[in-house]
Amino acid sequence: MNTPVAIGFDIGGTNVRAAAITATGTIIDREHKQSHGEAASMEDAIVAMTQTLSSRHEVAAVGIAVAGFLDEHRQNVRFAPHLPWRDAPLQQRLSQRLGIPVSLEHDANSAARAEAAFGAAQQADTWAFISIGTGIGGAVMTGGEIYRGAFGTAPEIGHLPVVPGGRPCPCGKRGCLERYCSGTALAATAQEIAVAEGAPEQLWTGESVIAAARAGNSIGKRAIVEFSSWLGVALSIMSDMFDPELIVIGGGVAQNHDLFLVDGVEKARGLVVGAGHRPFPQVVPAALGADAGMIGAAHLALTESRQDTAR
Image (cartoon, rainbow, N blue to C red):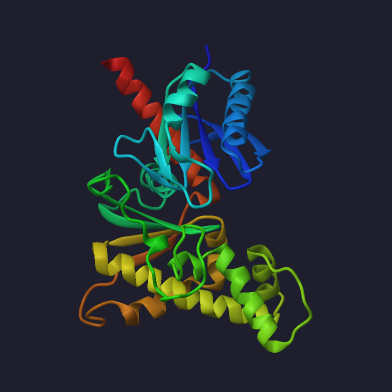
């Protein structure tokens, strides 16, 4: 008989990634689908991918990493800036359709759970995770537990207003941190620099900015410098608010940490309250890369399904 696995999902605005993952955090199979950004399309993709992976593996549970606010019981998606769900009972809908246990978790919390269990934070007690991808998210763990706040939404660093009246954000506000420190922000910054320099018109993306910087392009390099400064702001916020011993940087953009992490840390050292008179946390890249969210979601799903069975 095959060892049961869980399916971990990472839900993006236009892409849905899934993996069959063992109890030791090992990915043994993958699936990927495009979605149309609508709730029904997203949920249909989750069901179809679960059915595909279940045809090849004995699946005990499903875990879903969502970039958005969940209720304190992690059953409903209250609000997700880049996703279509609003006050959606997603856990109930999917568990009814799939017929197996489904666990929901914030995407940064999922990634933090994976890094704590299998990655860069295995030896840490009080530590923080910053996920940099399309947006920027945060998580804090202490004593092996996720810190969620009173209503399950902490710590939402990506939507702290850092530039009054600044760039518009999908959350409805302006000047949020993720408008300046994310893959989307890299593209916006490069576009602003290109317009100011009168450079030939082109469509910038986070990926193209990184590629340009690596190739020595001045626009790409300047965008990375600005990004590094905003990363310093993010690191100093986490350090001042939670006083962690360790900060792990993950997410898709963070896979290129060699371009900006050293400068970001140096900036943060000068921004924290009491700079030079207090310990500064160790800052390291995530060990599990962009797969951390899926691994953490699967780990949570297996853990909770075992607890339900034991009751």
